[in-house]
Length: 134
Image (cartoon, rainbow, N blue to C red):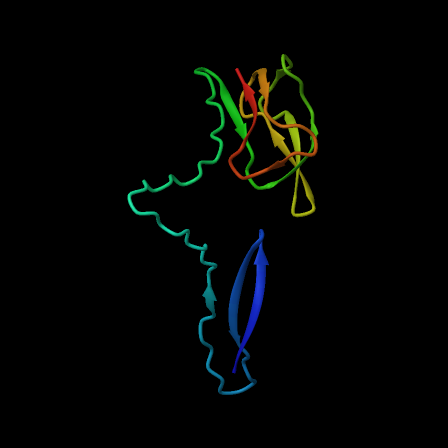
């Protein structure tokens, strides 16, 4: 017997069907997941198609500089360095809270902090540039 559930992940609602498995002789089938479908906008005759929204692209890192990126989504709970500070490889530069754990994000090279692109309390995604070292 399949049971239907509605699950909301990051604001997106999904309908999931799950089969309840009995003790003996029950067969297991793969769950059926129905992804949300965006509402289609009515098309106007002769009107050009609108471009998909573009996420703000991060500013490029200058040549000779290295960037420290977020390894996972989370919240910045502390920034341990300031612009102009000298850092060594392995030195903690940012504390990132993810999955209720504090993670030290460390310098990936020796150098001077050129930019800090996050602040305490900011929410970041995986791959976001946190600090630039030159």
